[in-house]
Image 1 (cartoon, rainbow over the protein chains, first blue to last red):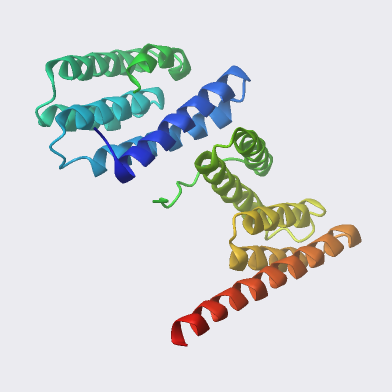
Image 2 (tube, rainbow over the protein chains, first blue to last red; image 1 turned 60 degrees about the vertical axis):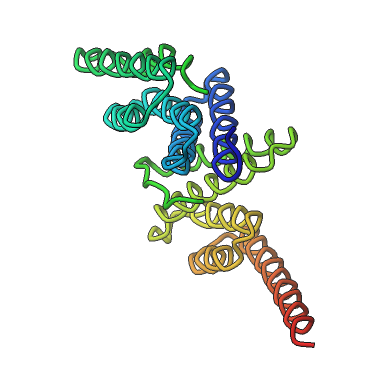
Length: 131
Length: 133
């Protein structure tokens, strides 16, 4: 069970993600992007705080969630780094599979971006992996 | 826990609009009782409003925009409890050529900052006395 600073940081990241979704619904795209960036920052921090924790489940969940946020922010290299770090531990099989799913989405998004598609159209694919 | 914020490029109006929107979302978060989110959004609003003020700081003739942005950023700094930053922004605003009404508002804000500083110093002094007696 995740507790302490990592838990608080994760909760802030999730709350910011919710507000980003609200901003998106209202059409405030600049606010949505800003809040998503902040959610990514805090979720990455939460994951780093758990980096040496023996609780592999939560560690992997946080890296998966941070990677998903990085994907939504269009930060593909950062997403890959987070996925690799998540997989570098011993994540439970289910979470490892989800990390690989996010990696597929990142690669797909990178290909689509190379073809010139808008990043915003890619965001909905990755949301289900945010914790 | 706060990171050094990334500089986001943009024009003055867009940066100011983002700051204003973040302040509105902070108010929503406050109404909902999300204290951490409120604090985060206010800090980001302050960051962007300060950036907008900085972008116009050298344009002394660009009034009332210049002083209005400095007043707004100072007010956010005060709400965030950044008293030194608030004072700096007010003095920067006054050092241009603000219209009379904004000049008055900046001076009122400066009084408020000074009162808060005195209150803070009194509280610190009181704590120190308690520890040393």
